Image (cartoon, rainbow, N blue to C red; front, side, top):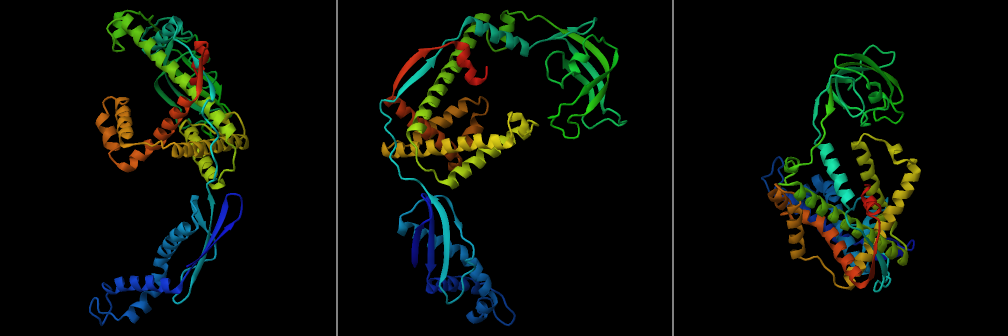
Length: 441
């Protein structure tokens, strides 16, 4: 077998391979013999059809069938011979066609290779870990949000005001059309005035209504509304108010605590404080990790394999598009043009590829591995985070292929923790609310 390797760029390679005719013919003959054992043809007993007849009838099909084997086996040998490790899937160059009997078979593949580099020194990296403790104000604020989530309402005889619940029947029409639009039929539909959950102007139009009132609510659908048939159009909702309810003031007593699995309010406040402490610690670790990764990215500049970056970009970009689609939103929800968003996501893809390569090299250099015990411990942790579904979680990860889903993150964490052990970390107290912004709170 003849093999030649050509550098077509800093990390781009072209591998040209010629498979001898003898190897092609041997593979074809092997396959034809398999077919001959079972082939049925008029005038011959099964398995007794002469080879030249089998070859005449099935030769072309066999050449097509063995093509994949010819390429996969010869490519693996060629890669080993030239000691190259492709980054991503090699791409077959056009024009090779199918193998032919008695002829050498030549083809070429193009691919990227991983860069050869030595990671920058990580020992002694100076980092600042921002820390904070939960305040009484935060505990009371979270109590208020818990009360909001379990808010109860009672009948109200007067006019509806902001904060009240209005229950309506109604039907929506695009202005000037006689037929109501799809999805515009509202039945026993509850609306909390002032919640901002409906299109602008709808809730405000219902302030002042009473049970039994009928009212036409005129609004304009936003230009970026998820339904293109309604986006930017004026509409009228013909509404009938079934009832008006006002919120009952929450009582922070032991009875309230039992709604959240605690016996007393002191127990509930303690539980909230512990959860806030966990959240703040997670936010602190997240910022520390980001600062570390910023330094690693800055200190390790080298050429990246374009095909790997492209694959990573497609993954993160498609994930973002799917997320927007599930929420009924378009690209405009990102607050920038599609081209601007793609530039940002490509930079993110490059960062992830670069960090992945550096962490992998550090793990290899310092013999950091994910063992069976690590995987089992992580599966137990995932099960514990899903009470009531422990058996399903363990059954899911019983498949070794699915265990690979957690090996990558586990490896990253082990290498990151190792780097942090080599680093000089200084704690710095910061405002609690500022740290909680890490989670958009």
